[in-house]
Length: 351
Image (cartoon, rainbow, N blue to C red; front, side, top):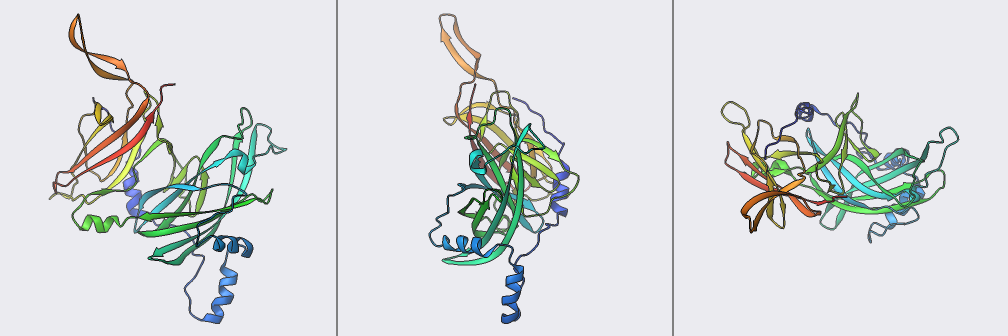
């Protein structure tokens, strides 16, 4: 099966190589202990009572559930000299207490304050590397509002490779409700993996949509339904639930590829979709001259089925059924001969 490449985001590779990550440090370097204590008091952006709550749960990783939330995934994005970690949390509408403002009867709105510490995990030791506060303002249509419905919220922050612990508090300034949660995650050292003569990829993610912004957004940031990256709003399919006929865009960076004598990349990728490790559809081999991959993936509506009956033996197209599938990605760097296979599980629904 053939499919086409999209070039609408071909400038992303250039932007990644030129990106300077913008964020402010909450904890400056220490020089004088007495001055430091005063400096820390002034520099801290987290109120003392909230900081105490975050510190209280560090050892046990037990959160405060007055405003329930929990981070369950992290997306690692490439950037110049570092990486962007996008932490994903699913939160119920009712827990954020959306209300109807007097000035807008068509939408329900809520405001939240997010306070977080990020610790680098070194064996059993925790080293505080970031302390920040960021606000979010969100809206949902009033028509058909479901308080039990959940949405994905994305907290973005730049970090080097390493193991980390996120200690986060989310509070509603209107209702004064606040919850805390803890999440451990790791950012691989992709450059080290590449130097060892191996291929590896950054996080593989499927996008529902991507929109260009006028200017680059600073970090940290906290968004509903999308995350910001360089000058883009990226709307991921975090649940990995797809329908026949949809065409999500797959994006990722390959580390460890080598340019040829002409200083160009020569990469082949084979994509196929499998159910129970049986190929349902295989796409034609795609060639790339950049290690940043941006590829629409058409989800089939039919599959080939071998039929044997009184009319003989033949191959027919039959509607693809719902179930659990995998998108299988086989990468070959033709310059080095290195190969890599990656798989993305997804659920296919037909209604």
